Image (cartoon, rainbow, N blue to C red; front, side):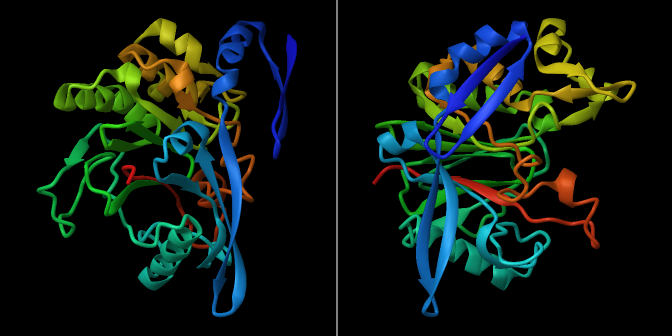
Length: 308
């Protein structure tokens, strides 16, 4: 066993990990670079604090993006929550939440585009021919050229993943839960970017936002069998306390997909937030949904757009 310390300006985490994970974690230390930000906006003469995360790499290339939290909204999850999903909320509340979020990011001139997410491996390219009234059914959105929109994915335990090619004005947002990860949505989306736009994957940068961590994301044996590569199984699953159940490291599973496509680990910012451990900051379907009176919870959003 080895004790590693990670010190951040806003965060001090202590990880006790098995020796087999030490070298992998040490190699990726420098990519743990999501920053927590707090911005005050004024709504009807009242100051409101909006809290969100940004990627150091994406920010350094002036690529507009952020991962929202649950702080500073008007939704009743349970109250004053910044829910970003229309699925279980009144539209007027979600619109107000989006307005506040965009104001905090100083991106009021942009509109947020999301798709109907079905835990698939489907990605859609939005180019100059895209019409905003088009209904999108996908779990990954790719935006080329337009600076009018931000593309986003709604999550509450699944991973929000943002990618960009600096200089080519191409960005991507991916929703990766266990189903999408098992279908290799991250790998397939990167390959699509590479093939459609003649992009070298090694030139992509991005960030993996908060999701349920490897100590919380329990799945059944049938899910483990959906990952047929036995070596990869050993890297991303560990036995749970319950018989025939496992804990899935969703973040590592998607980092391995990036690695397979040729994206270096140093190009992808990650962090130690967990939607279940840090439920005060992020929505968690697994923690809140089954426990709430109406069995529903909000969603936070990962958004990205092209640089101006």
